[in-house]
Length: 149
Image (cartoon, rainbow, N blue to C red; front, side):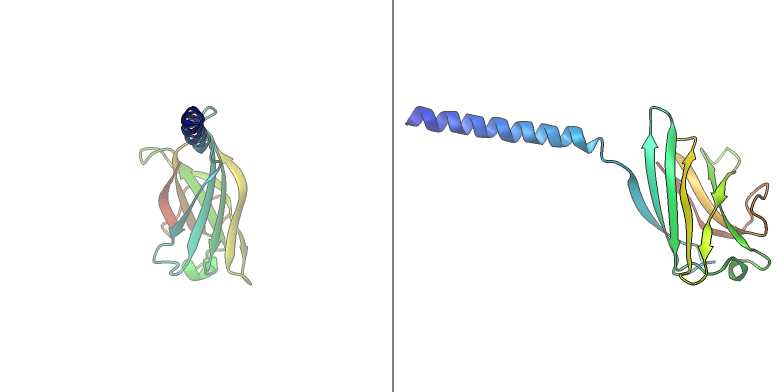
């Protein structure tokens, strides 16, 4: 009887250890990271929900952004009609346009549907702009710069 209890205890410990190790291995494959970032003073009360699915091997990130409680671009900066997302791999690099947020004035949400950024780690910036493809970001930063990845 004592031998059977010892075997059960060893079996139970082995099972717990294997379960712990499997959990640690799977935690590295946790899927996309998500974070919420508060807006700047130009859009008080707005929050950006950022989803980043990083592929470190390919050095790319699938990025999606949803900004809630966002005022219309013209209220952020006079003459602005669009909200543009930008990225750069470091503070030494120039900003590169990622895309234009789809803004819904009824819900006051701005959405950047899933797009790919050619870096596993970068800074994200969202600005109010007069055009959809400006050469560089305006000073009307609504979100960021914030690190992603």
